[in-house]
Image 1 (cartoon, rainbow, N blue to C red):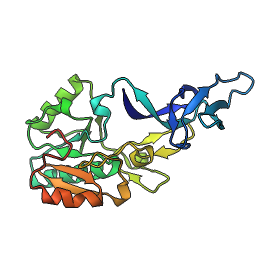
Image 2: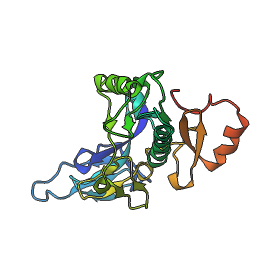
Image 3: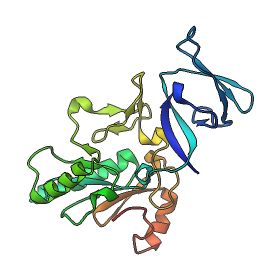
Image 4: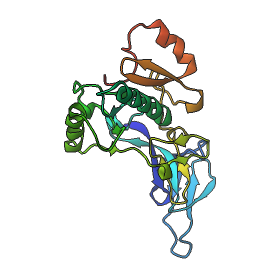
Amino acid sequence: MARTTLTVPGSEILPGDILKRYPSAAVAEAADVDPRYPNSRTLIMADGTRYLCSPVQEYVVTRDVDDEPATAHATTPVLCLGPVETPADVKALRALAYSVAYELGRPAVWATNTDHTVTDYAAVYLTAASLLDAATLVLLGEALVADMDVHEPLTADEVVTCDCGLVHRHTRPLVDAQGVVWCANCLGDDACSWCGEELDTEAAEIVESGNGFYPVHAACLAGVRRDASTSRLHAAV
């Protein structure tokens, strides 16, 4: 069994779940939604407290699961792809990787050649939806064949801001049924690339190593600098 963080509607909260909004006690009983009161569901917590939730609103919960997919872990990197034919292309690709690492709170690697196994990555992000060079097209094709998530650049209208203030200019955060934006940090889905613990994005340091950017705790930065290698950075590079 492994503990993982999930985002589920109130109708799918299970006994044993721990709500991020009520972390002091696990759910002991989860009553079915009463047809007379379709907009609420009663949860009985392990400490005896009754907690009313909305069946349609999404909640962040910690749950014991049999197997946690490797790609679900926040230290699994994403791969950034784009043209690399000119210095300006490379600069744009590197900038995208930095921004994605910051917004997601997870490592982001930018590819300048085909020496990557795309299935080692959690998702693919593109600097451009067209004008891709040969190397990018090869990796993009492999990602599509593997049915991976491929994210094209956001338009200005698609940029959103989480209530915590984090602006998503390159990544799509969760938006719940009420229209509330949840960034990875607020969901608890980010992690330090050095120690693997949950990360505060605003207080994180973004370390560049090779063709990758790695979010780490400020307190872990000294450890990163002491180790000349990147072997302890949790990334598939």
